[in-house]
Length: 527
Image (cartoon, rainbow, N blue to C red):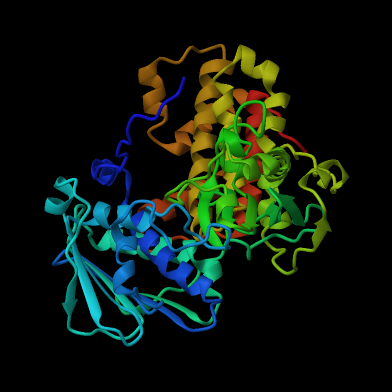
């Protein structure tokens, strides 16, 4: 038996809004309001100029956002505050579909908001949203007629902010807007300004490395999901920047309807982690994969705030298996070529990605792509292998050869004063090698610490002491060169005029240091 006995009211309480204040950051909230303007413009076929201006006063702690997207009629003002109320069609290629973003964002930003809007030549209307109004679960709100603003304009003014904005956060907001709306800013009819300055787009798909041995790959897919067309564009490859600083700009970037949703994503869902591409590491910092999805808003795999991906969404799960393969491919390539990046990655900045049109994401076959170059072992693993047995019995020898490896690696860097650093490293290595020789290789006499301290007060007494025991291991020419490089080091450290350390001196001193290590201590270096 089933008899209807009454109807109950399920209108949501305003606690729905109050609960999200802590979950919304400033830049996400501002973007929600910009998204709303872009959607109105998109629905109108983007055939007129859209100006969105943002004014942030860090002294008064206020924000005003103004657009000319069209304004609202008086009877549509409920769209501003009613949760789930929206004029947007979620089957359109827009970037707002949940009907809650702009409402949550203004409340997250400020406890006191004034909205003014004018539709065409109709009067200008205004509503106030405040914490006092939020405390009352009555959804009725007063509407005011105010002095006219420009036609087809909406102004949202937040008179005080819940979170302080300073000069640093203002710079971050500018950078964030530049990235999020880069692709939309390519449309000359869209203008976005922050404090009187045009926001310039920051693109992440224009710094590929086009080395033919591991070129970037592109795929374009049109697929039907729930009887509607979704376009997917995938760009993947190595980037011609990064390296020692790490940059942090590697990983996965996902755009939905030209809006950047996530950037630099490096988690298990996109292929990083155990059993996949491994954990994020500086050696993988040249890998980048960009996913662009276009289609009905309700088929976009974003969360309601558009600052993260819904990893349970059917569209993301369609892409994920091949995304993981591409992440694995290019992080492996980055790791293998990282030691030679200045020669094999960074110079190849000219070219364009050729996009292969396919019918399904599953058609991407990474096994048919060019083979990834093998990892070229650097000097440290080779040197370590050559001296493994010696290091097992004499662990102090590790520091001897590692100093030379470090000095040689510095020679490939772009530091302007690298030769000064290398000179000091090699000279110190020579002195320590003499000490290790006297204390570990010379059996008699046994040197007390006090004796060593006295010997090492002057370099010439060190040389004389070593000569007593090393015989012809080092010849006269070697000792003459050792004196020369020691004096060069002293000039660098102690004289008023800085000594000029040239490349040829460094090359010769490196070879001499290796000879001293080999003859006196038995260290081996790769040929």
